[in-house]
Length: 147
Image: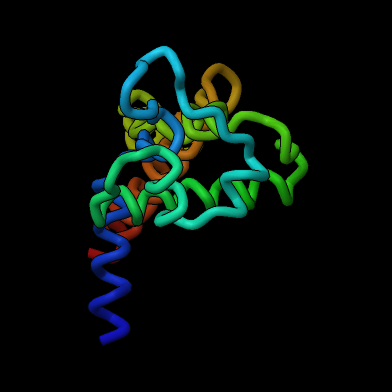
């Protein structure tokens, strides 16, 4: 049962976007009166309270994303990158940076040299994917050496 839950959560993390209604929602009625929540306010509430405050019913996917955003905000507060008075939208926009094809391909085809090039000239997200590309190339090269 634990393996099934872990598998479902892993798949949802991979396929779900961090662009949740948790941050970008507006109250029903007037579109200009956007829901203003600070990081501290968001960390104190659960998904049900957020749904009541925003006036929208959250689906299961949105509740899971709400929890993921909340976890990301907690880690950023612990690291000191955010304070409780900041807007949570800046962390969510950083988290939406997805797969970097250029970083991955440089890491996969040029291994360590590609990783160094990405480290010098590209952003942190591309560096993460260059690292995974480099690991993949090491696995492939290692498999070829063993054969």
